Image 1 (cartoon, rainbow, N blue to C red):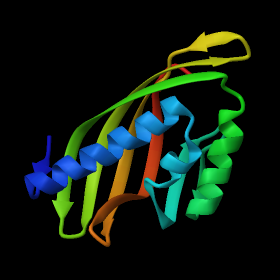
Image 2 (image 1 turned 90 degrees about the vertical axis):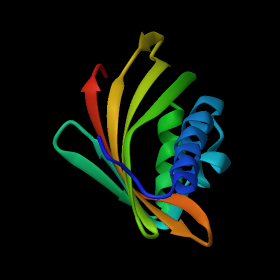
Image 3 (image 1 turned 90 degrees about the horizontal axis):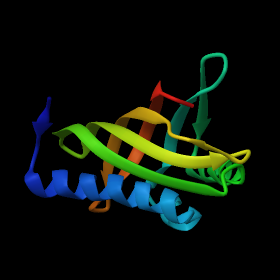
Amino acid sequence: MVWTGPLEDRILIRELLDSYADAVSQRDAEAWGATWAEDSVWSLPVVEGMSEIRGKANIVAAWKQAMELFPFVQMIAVPGSIDIQGDRAYMRSYTAEVAVRDGKEIRPRGQYDDVCVKQNGKWLFEKRVFTVLYGE
């Protein structure tokens, strides 16, 4: 487990992760989008390999479209490690979600491997790579 860098920055990165999860649970596209850097990348598993979405506007548009499939979602996220190297940080976090899709409850568990960047004093996601650990 790696926990390096100034405590204040680690707390701010934890708040970034918490803000992301809260925005998912609140279905708040504006707040969710505010966690991403403009030139960010989001990698998600698909049936065949990974799907990569580039650019904040494209990421938010894809998220809005995906959220239409779920009338209910609640996301909890916890960091497993945060390694700060100047204005860049590497975080591993774990997610536990409860969602409803097609009338059925699903409970996926996952892992994010993130690159965060500090821009104008604010930490943002620059790259998020999601891996399903269990469930849908």
